[in-house]
Image 1 (cartoon, rainbow, N blue to C red):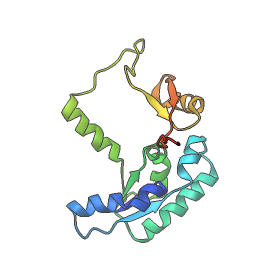
Image 2 (image 1 turned 90 degrees about the vertical axis):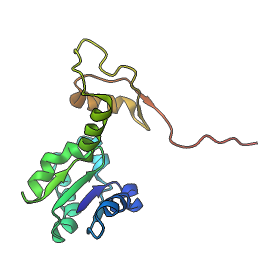
Image 3 (image 1 turned 45 degrees about the vertical axis):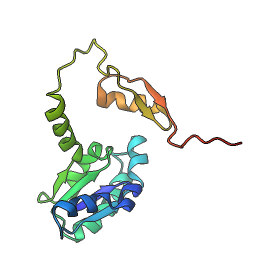
Image 4 (image 1 turned 180 degrees about the vertical axis):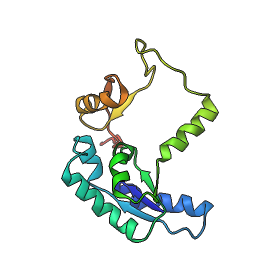
Length: 161
């Protein structure tokens, strides 16, 4: 099983741990993809440069003959069409968000259709660590509306005396 993920996720070995807990002995290759998120966020997914980088990240996985590749970052489903072009048909691409959504449906019930005229986000806060206007602009095509986005810091607040 191959995993395409951010450097922090690959370094943590999180996918290896969870897969081996249910399927001991499975060979897992966690591939760090540091260029993916910045390029996806900048809208450079359909460039030759992005394709070359994707091939570079996929090569170790394909050389090992992986049967499946997990898209280990919330950004990566946005490049699934490109990845499908680059991997053999026999390699399954897995979006773990779909499994999470199905689990949420079983706990919360099926999602309800929302009228476009209503506030589709309800009480949802959309937070980013930088460039809220850029995120709102780019996400409009994914969400169908321009969301309100706020900037937050993930750094702990400290007190100095």
